[in-house]
Amino acid sequence: MVVDQNQPEITARHYYLENFQVLSDFVFQHYEGLLSPQETHFYHTLAALPEPAKLLCIRLLMRRGEYLRESRISYPEIGSLADALAHLTNTGLIETAHARNAADWLNLFTKDELHNITPMLNAAYAGGSTPDTLPEALTHHVDLLGDTPLDLITRLDTVYKISCKEHYQVFLLLFFGNLHQDLTEFVLRDLGIRGYENYLTDTTALPFQSRAQLLAYQQYYACESCFDEAVEQGPDALRSLFKALPDNTHNDPVLQRRVHQLYNHIARQLEREAELTDAAIIYQLSVYPPARERLARVEASRGNYRAALDICHQITAGPNNSEELEFAGQFSVKLCKKLDVDFSPASRYRPPELAIDLPASQLSVEYASALHFARTGHCYYVENSLLTAVLGLTFWDVIFAPVKGVFFNPFQRAPLDFNDADFITRRRALIDNRLLEITQGKLREILFKHFYQKSRLVNPLVQWQSINYTLLSLAVEKIPADHWLVIFDYMLRDIKNHRSGLPDLIYFPNCGGYQLLEVKGPGDSLQKHQRRWMKHFSEHQIPHALVNANYQRVEHTAELPALLAG
DNA sequence: GAACGTCCTG
DNA sequence: TTCACACCGTCAT
DNA sequence: GACGGTGTGTCTCAGGACGTTCAA
Ligand SMILES: [Mn+2]
Ligand SMILES: [Mn+2]
Image 1 (cartoon, rainbow, N blue to C red):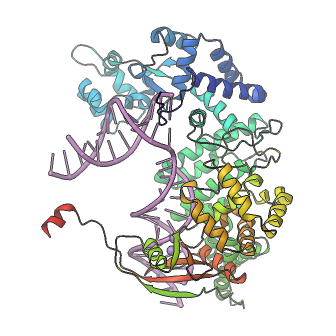
Image 2: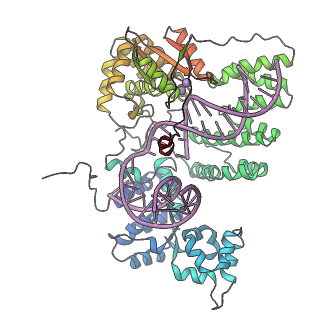
Image 3: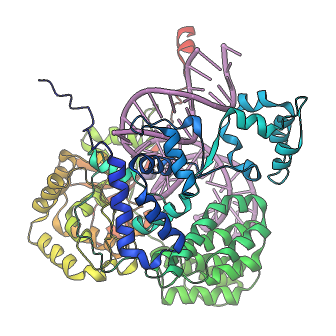
């Protein structure tokens, strides 16, 4: 008997029903107190449906739009579609779409269909008719036979509104803690496509504590989806978007980060619109970087050098990250010049440099440089992927340690507090223990234990496709333990900000040792965080250099005809 | 009619 | 659709 | 060289069915 290994594993017949029930039962069991009467009713109504109707409802909920055409619904496992649809409409879980919302569902019809129905509808639809005038155009204009455009469309197909979708969204938000994951997570897991670490989930400390908090999340997501539109519409739209954001984040660090991040985006856009007063007001409300940096710049550009300098002093006294700290130092110098105050500028680190000449090719300058160094050893273009992966593998069990309240569903790529400043402090003992083990020479053992045991599982620091045994093995062989400690220490200080800016290449010369090389072609120079990494390297004798590559990239637009002609 | 994007599926 | 990085133009020095 | 805006490469689970757009 031949078994096709590529054939996805057959899941249960009604896999999506089982998945939905796991999700909705969890939410109902743990969050019943947070649900509105309508949401509770949705749960019970759906549960009480006969199986075919239940299956259909979940199918419809899994689809993208809030509106659907009946002709686009076809599920062999559901016997009578008409019966199932009747159940759903009778219970109010779905309803036929109304002309007044035509702007939301008219695009379910193809251009051809709309064009064929009536030229006047076509004119109304394509010719810039607003959502307000569209329903009127649909129902008031009449053709020679007395039919309105709506009549003609209705004859073409029935459109349903999945009215229980808003309640389903609440269930998704409560279960996943966000709105970008859904039931496909279950499927991908069961098909073996995406694997999550089997961490311990803690249902006694769930992220949502009150309905107000839940509503604030929804409010945030509604605003976030409006941002692009507000940018196009201008300052007034941005201001009302700001006002529409929740002002209470209910002691939820995740929600606060998201809201304040959006504050920053709104204020930044107001800066571009030269609305500096409002930008400053909003920046002042934000705790999240780079709010203080932007605020200092805004104050300075308005001539308030004193205020700007005060902000810089505040940053220096309590920086949120290395970027802020460096900014405050450099900007203080500029401000002090304006204010005629003495201030000693900090000299910036200059890494050792070496220059190489490369033959022109189609490769990127990084790959071309890697080839150059590969002549005298092994060289990999790794950027951030190698060192972050080694950190993620080495500290795998620390990252997924069962800290209270950080794991609440089986589909998390990281603990809830992974990007928080206190991620380290809450795991201090585990981290110190692991660092001690590294000093005892156990790095290779721990690294490869996790490399094999956790292969392909999701880890916020590990991109599996960019690492392999050979590379990891070379790295742990050539980079001494005390260097790893220095690298890990710096990354762990601020994982979110210190997981990038690492040099392009890692070079293992035939003569032994290793070197981290940042390649710069003509017209490029070190970014700030790249320089900070190199400064850290130099303070701890980690071999590094800036490679100035004299290189001309050849476009590979030489098409076949051109080649034949030439 | 190819190329591309979106949606749906397990 | 995300992120990190390179690249490019502009401005002040 | 500082700064801001923009482009690029790399990820997405993979594959099929559509609809839309655009170049020949
Ligand atoms: Mn790079
Ligand atoms: Mn580089």
